[in-house]
Length: 423
Image (tube, helix red, strand yellow):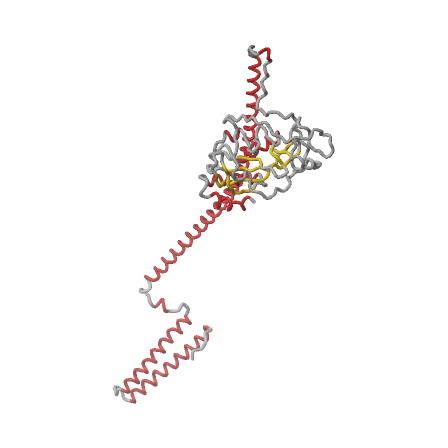
């Protein structure tokens, strides 16, 4: 499924993002681990009023709250210098939901975490950011059901509860929205939730919400209920005890100051440790995946090396066979060259047969052909009046008698040799 969005990412991020390939790979890894995230492009307005068209990952992430998994809708905006700068994260409520302010989420839905404030390229990525959001949302749910939304019984815990389908609307945040950040870079947000008024009688039939004295909300299908804690300012550290009116001029005990500092440091170290553990787990997962890929590559390389060794052995064997054939050809060429050199010494050995009957056939045939030539030249001499007729007839009769005897010998010799007759 992630591969289907590669072309979309390439078309809408090319020319805008300074580190295109790194940003695309980070987005692909996030969508690969969280299947409900989808890429989307829309205008994003910054605090200074400027608007830019940015790539975002929108969808839901699984959050475990009190043993039940819920799907929390989010939107992660990738800035043009990603991953050099941290992404901008928002909770994206549906029409039946409302953002709940807290230590990590403001009233506009923007998410604040130390992981984002301490963002560094190479050590931070979108997967680690989303995993930390799952952790902090599991401790403090960022959304609750709007007043007037009918409560429904919660489904069985083992299954993940998706939110109702979102209505068609522009991606969150909408153009013209001004994001609000934490007051300082040290990340100590201190928001006071602005909750809608509740009816004074929580026991009234048909009213699913409690009084304004608590922050507990009824369970809603798909939305995790917030903690049953009093509505108060969410400070990162325990509040300092207020001095009594009659002790205004008295000094604070040194033990109280030390206890307050230790408590604040302890809370900060716990948050840092949790973020570090989550980051290490993410890196361990990626390293294990890389190890599996490397082992698969090593197996493939071993197979290729074995095949190359086999082909090399076959090539060596073929080379030996070729050398043997070359030696045999050289010896045969030398033998033929020696025969060619000795051919002029005894020409009769070339044309003479090897057996007596064949030699008799060859010699008789050669003598018979010579007699044929003699008779021909005698006829030429008679035509030129070199010989008289009587002398011509005398020699022709003698030669013809010899020719007849030779032909009879040839016929008989061929028959003895098993050859066909030529006369």
